[in-house]
Image (tube, rainbow, N blue to C red; front, side, top):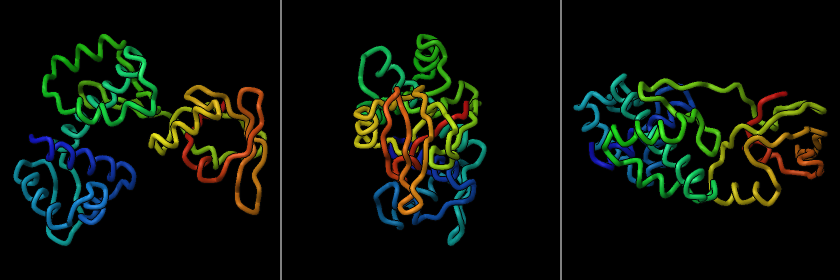
Length: 217
């Protein structure tokens, strides 16, 4: 596959994982930042390779071959993110763009050795699951911080927004994977949330609380 074909597969994989339904060409065009006509041309190529199910004016879904191929791209991306953070001391807000380049390396042997070298991690630095060599994914029970009730406590296990700006904001607030977060109260007016992290109370917006995944403890 070309780099472009791999990027399309990965984008369709993320879109279908989020909605669990077929996705539109317009949704793909938006995430790929291109024209719908260009998406249509690419979908025809991917359909010829038995990687997507595509019919004009209908939604798009991945075939079983397409799902596995997409998972392998995601696997490489997330393993490289772990490597960059754990071995080269990059911060979690720096690694996405670099991993975007490294994910296109073709050597399966290299990726499997990288996986073993890192101790076969199941999550990337942002808390997203890493598929194993067979495409299996260990799912984590999690919910958004904004969904917690007063006086509940959770451990941060992931982020919905992986933008550099959001991750840098979390760093400033001392919130990271593994942070224990006590949900103190929610304002009915703007749905902002008061939390306690590292023995420090702070107020965060509903937008921030809606982009943090936690596991109840």
